Length: 288
Image (cartoon, rainbow, N blue to C red; front, side, top):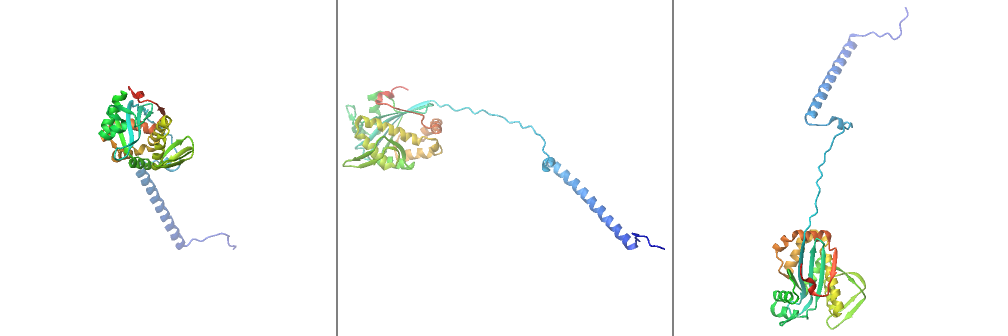
C-alpha cells in the first residue's frame, strides 16, 4: 500500500506541547488587554490628551485678553544751577543754568561768566567765595528774576570722577585745537570725540578763553554731557547716577526729591534728550 505524502501522525507529547503554547498565548493576551485598559483610564483621569500624544491634533479656541498700555505723560519744568569750582571756592571754572522741560524732553542751557557782577556784593565767583552755595543761588535769582529749583556743585576732582564713571563723554569738537598756556596744554582733533574727565575739564577751561563764543560752546558741551547721561542706555543706572551726584558733589537734591521726580527721570531716561536750546541770557529762564 502506498504511503500518503504530508501525512503527520500527532503523538501525545506533541499534543501536550500545543496545548501549553495556547495557554500561555491566551494568558499574555489577557494581561496586555488589562494593562492597556488600566493605563488609558489613568491617563484620562489626569487630563492626558491621547490624541495629541499620538499626533492627532484637535482644534482649540484660545481667547486672549488685550490690555492697551497707555503712555505716561509727566509734565514738569525744573531749573538747575550747575557749576565746577576749586575745592577752596576761590575760583569758579564754569557756571551754567539748565532747564529741563517734560514731556518734551527738552533741555535749555545758558552758560554764565563767573566774573559777571550780580549785586553790590560782587561777581558770582566772589559771592560764592564769601558766602557759599545758597548765597550764589539767591544772587542769581535776584539779579535775573528767575527761580532756581536745585543746584549741583562739583570740584575739579568730582567733575573728572563723574565723567570717568561713564567711561568718557562724547563731545563735538568744531575745529582742531592746539592750545597751551602756563596752566595746561590741550590738543584735540576736529570731530565727535569721547573725552575722559581730565581732557573734558581742560576743554571747558579752554572755552573760557574764547569769550562770548566760548560761553555758547560751553553751553553746547553741557547739553552734550546731559545727553550722554540721560540716555536709554543708562536707564537702569539712574539710582547709581543719583548716588554719584549726592555722594561726590555738593547739592540740595535729596533722596526725597529724587523719589518724587522718579516719573520725570524715567521719562527722560527712556526717551533721551529730544530738544536742545542754547540761550545767551539768563533772563530767558524767567517764568515756567
